Each structure stands twice: as C-alpha cells, then as structure tokens.
Image 1 (cartoon, rainbow, N blue to C red):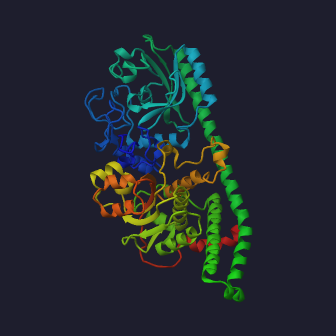
Image 2: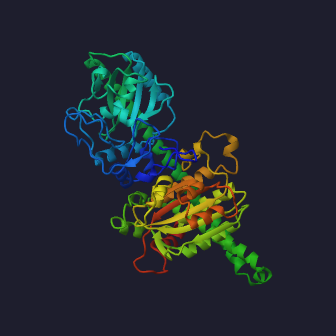
Image 3: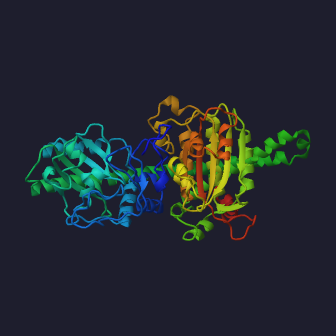
Length: 577
C-alpha cells in the first residue's frame, strides 16, 4: 500500500471493497472479505501492484483475465492481478477461474488460521521434514489472495509472508502433478529472475505437495527448499514422504478447525444461557419501574428530570431485553445470518432481507440513542446530525444498528477529553461521484459504494488510533493482554468494535475507521468537511468510525411494526421460560 501523509498505508478497500481498516500490511487477504460477493468483486476488479516496488500505489486495471497471452508461459510484462501467477506454464498447470478461486479462498478463510500464532504441532512436522530431506528450509504455506502466509516456517527466520507473485507455492497448487518439483531454478524460465532466487534465500531447489482439504481444494503446500540445486529432483519414495507429511498437516488443520468450532459453539451456548437467565430478574426490574411510573402519588412528587430518568431506565431495560432475546434466537437458529452475508444487491436478496428485518424509524432510533447516551459518562458534548436525504424509515435490523452506533459512541466518550463527539447519519448514493483525492485517501466502500447505502459516522476529537492497532481493531480483545489491561475500564473496547463488525457484516454492510485529518486532506475546499473539522479544536486529531448498510426502502411507508417486532412480542413469554 502506498504511504500517506499520516504514516498509514492507504486502505486497499478503496479499490476492492476490503473489510480491514488501513494497516501497514501490503498484501490483501481473504480475511478482509465477509461475503462471497465482496470477494468475487475484489478478484474481478482488484488493484494491480508493481511488485518491484513494495510502496508502489495500487491502480485499477479492469477485469482480470487468466492465461490471455499466447504461448505456454504467461508473458512477464502483462499487468497481473495480485492473485494471479506470473510466468505460469500453461502446459503443466491449470489456471483457476475466479469462481474456483473464490471457493478455494472462502474454504481457506473457514479454517480461521491465517495470521494465527505459531503452533508447536505444525512446527514439529516442519522440523521433522527438514531432517528427513536434509534441507535448510521447510514451510507450511497457505496461499492467500495476494500473499503466501507461513503457518510454519523452518529456516526463514521471522518471515511470515511473501507476495503471491513470487510464490513457488502459488504454482504448486495449480500444477497437474501431485508433487511440484523445481530441480534447478537457474535453468527454469519461470523462476530464474524471481526475487527469491536472485536474492535471499537464494532458492535453487523447491518441492511442494499441496494441502488438499477434505472438499478437494488446494489451500497451500507443504514444501522443502534448498540453496543448492538437485538436478535429479526427488525420488518416488521422497515424493511419497512429502505427500504423507502434507496429509498430516492437513489432518492437523482439520482437527484444529473442529476444535475451534466446538469452542465457538460452546461459547454461543453459554451466552444464550446467560441471556435466558437474565430475562427473569430483568422482568422484575421492568415491572417495578412500570409500577413506579404509574404511581400517581409518586409522580406528583417527581420533577421533569426525575421522570425522564425513570423513562430512560425503562427504555434501557427494554433494549437489554431485546438483546437477550436476540442472543437466544440466534442460538436456536432463528436468525439466518448466512443469508444476510450474501446480500449483494437490492434485487437478488431483497425478499429474504425484508422478511428477516423490520422497519427502522430514523427519528425513533435517534431518540433512543439520545436517551441512552444522555446519562453515559462523557467529558465533551455530543451532537447528532441527520441529513435531509435520509428517509424516515428504512428496512433493516434496528437493534443491530442501534447497538453498533452505541458501541461507537461509548468508545468515543471514553477516548475524548476535549473537543466534541459528533454523530452523523446520511445517505450515500451509488450514483454519486467521488473525487480522485477522496478515492485515494478515504475508504472506497464509504465514498464509492456499489449500491445506495445508509451511512453512520461517529467523529471524535480524541488522541486517534495508533498505527499498530489498525489490523486488529475490529477483532476480539486478545487473550494475551495483561491482567491490568484486561481489567481496565477500556477492556471492552475491542469487543465493542468486534460487535460492530459482526452485526454490520450480518446486514451486508461495511465498516471501518480513518483519521479525521483525512477529511481535510481529501476535501480541502469542502465547507461541510471544514465545519466538522474545525469546530472546538484547532488540531486535526481524532478518528472517524463509520459503517454503512444497504439502503432498502419500504414499498409502502408505514409506521406499523416490522416482522421482527411482531415476532418479539409473541415469543418473549416463551423465551423467558
């Protein structure tokens, strides 16, 4: 990614719709994409990078085409997509179509293993192979969108990833052979000019066996590398040994995946049971609040502020009830989030989306936000702005949108000690044009959405987000955090942002964050941006946390409850039992 003035890599989301906020990483990963549709679009219209310069800017080169050049080996000077393999020998390899690559990458993502810590069970296998084959380097390499990532690395030091363009393993997973062998790289036209051959680790010999999932997809390779050529390649016995070791790695990955799924299911069950158990005492709280609010004698003694506090307490208890009910429904399988993840346009999934969601009344949403945040501890004023282009009602999940806004706002309240916090809700049309500067600096999914979206932004004037925190900002709090951090008042911030990522993704939306200074940089002559940037603070500090969801309007405007609202009232009693 190209460096920007604020010392962060440009968000690759600008071109491809990726999900990760700006980060120092230069390679795209399938972990950035929540749905098949977003991944497919990214592969079809990805950025092209001049791999000779790691800091080169990305630029669109149109639709990717594989093997379009004449001759058995792809021409070196063609602008390749980052997931395509240069110098591919089409006489011994079968290129992946976009659909095949989407399927393979989504399966790789399903293992939840990319960017994980090194694990001893994989390290033992690579160490064993290094001794068996007498090679200095042995790797478990997983082939991602624009990179090969090393699950285990024996002999390459701290290196965990390299570009897919220079990856031998990217060739191996496309090879027609069950073991891909390069006896002498210097005499192979595909690799003689490869940076890993002409420079460290100076590869002269390579052999890799594919990691084949139970579904038959090649996720990567188990490979051995030497700095000395082996003109005779590998014997039949050595090839068999390499295949067996690759199978052992794949079996270990499958076992790991099943264990993670079991743990995840157990955590979901615990959350659902806790939510169920909370409903009983919560009902008592609600009944007592309602009794107090209907007590005429007491109401005569309360002033307006005290009555507002009572109303807010009851409203908060109702929201807690809905969150508990949603957790129980999710555990029971009533919420089919996988369908929502596949929302790609307003036509294909409109009926499913409408059936699973109710109406979101924007005025009511803002009222609820105001009531809840009014009593939340904060040191700066909060301003809420709803643009004129926002319709009175949209079709979506009001609770998920409310929870996501609340998580952004409470996080801003914790971080901001001077200046202001601003909540802005507006509509961004797919037909609206973005300036080249906006496309370069701001998230592409925000300024150039592929469909009409409802956008929510929370601007704060806090200290901003440190560069190293961007890659994991929307992931759960790491188990490796110190006890002091884990028990601090900020320890839930990671879970709050992770909740936003989960809820908005389930609605087919996008989310992210960028520095407030980017607004001024991207729109120096924009009066609206200037107003948001300069009021009450002279230094452009702070962040803009945002999310967008598909803008789907009701066919006939109405204020009647949506399907989920009606279902909630009918099921509440049974769920509390």
